[in-house]
Length: 258
Image (cartoon, rainbow, N blue to C red; front, top):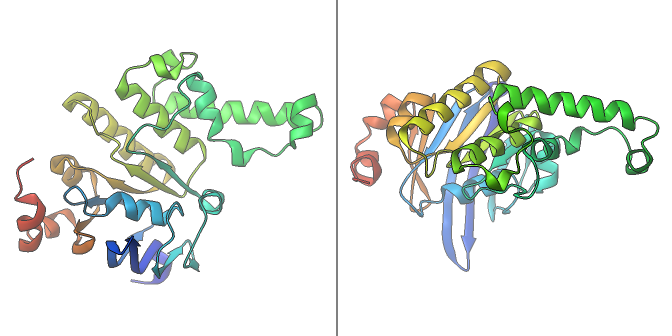
C-alpha cells in the first residue's frame, strides 16, 4: 500500500502528563475515505490521541503526517485550516445561540470578506453571507434538523445537540472528521440514527472519519478499521473481524463486560 492512500499517519507518538505516559509509542495509518474507530477501556489514551491529532496536545515524541505534510506539532488553528474538524465528548456548543448560528460558526474559515466589510456590509460581505448561509442550510438539511434551525441549542434534547455539534463540524467541509464519543448517553434508537448520519457523511462527502466509541456493536457495524488501545499502548490494529479475533484485545477490552 502506498503512502498516498493514507490521509493520516501517526508514527511513534508518545505523550506524558507529569511523567505518566498517556500515549506510548503509537503508530497507525488511516486510509482516505475510511471510518476508523479507536476503542479501549476508560483511560486507554483515546481522547488524548485525538487531541494530539488536531493539535490541542503536543506530542513529546513522534511525527504526524496529514494529507502529505509531516509535522511533530500542529496548532488547533492550523489543523482546522488544513481540513481537520472534531466534536467533543462533552458537547461544546454555544448554548444561547440558535442551531443555524451554531452551524454558521463552522464556516468561519471559509469566510472571504474582511471584518471591516462585514461590519459595514460592503465589498464581498453581502455575497459572502449568502454563500455561508446556503452552505450551513445544506448541512442542516443533510442532518435533518430543519425543524429546529431557529431553536436555541440549549433548549434541545441531548441527542439533537449532538447532531448540531456534528453539523457544525461538517460545515467546515473537513477532510478528516474526529468524533469523540458521538453516541455517548444516547439510547439505541438515537445511536442507530447517528450511525446512519456518520455513514451518510462518509458516502456523500467522502470524509475520512476517526471516532471513539464504547459500544462494540456500533463499532463493528460502522467501521472499516479498528485500532485498540490499552494503558496508552496499541494492542490491536486491523479490520473489525481481525480485531474481534485478537486474543489480547479480547482479554483487555472485548471480553470485559460494560
